[in-house]
Amino acid sequence: MSQKSNRLFDLISNQGLVYGRVDVGWAVFDIKLVSGLKSGESSCWGTCDFDSYVISLEKKMEDAPARETLLHEICHIFLDFCGLGGAGDESEESITTSNEAVTITMSRAMIMFARLNPELARELLCLN
Ligand SMILES: [Zn+2]
Image 1: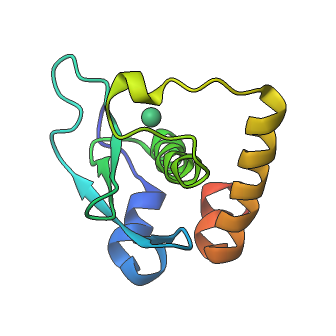
Image 2: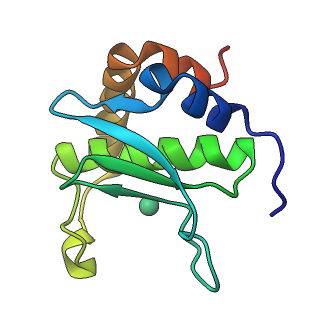
């Protein structure tokens, strides 16, 4: 993917205090732009580290996938908080639930995300 203008990454880099962090209630995760997550056959564009409270995003991403990837990592954090996460072991990440239960969890998580991070939520949801 070629390096093109990335509004989200520009905002994270230039206004780090506003866009470089995600408040998830029980912790504040820093957002770091890194190189090397996406290399070779790895399809990883982002990670979230629950020990260091860091969301890492691959630098060589265009704006639209960067927004989706950041929101994806934020969803991992909220799902983990709601008891729908694993410790990194694939067998622990298999969860039996229902569409309704996940929908309730995610809709409440999205409301909590937006209330705790109004500016970032507006940006990620393309409301700016
Ligand atoms: Zn994921």
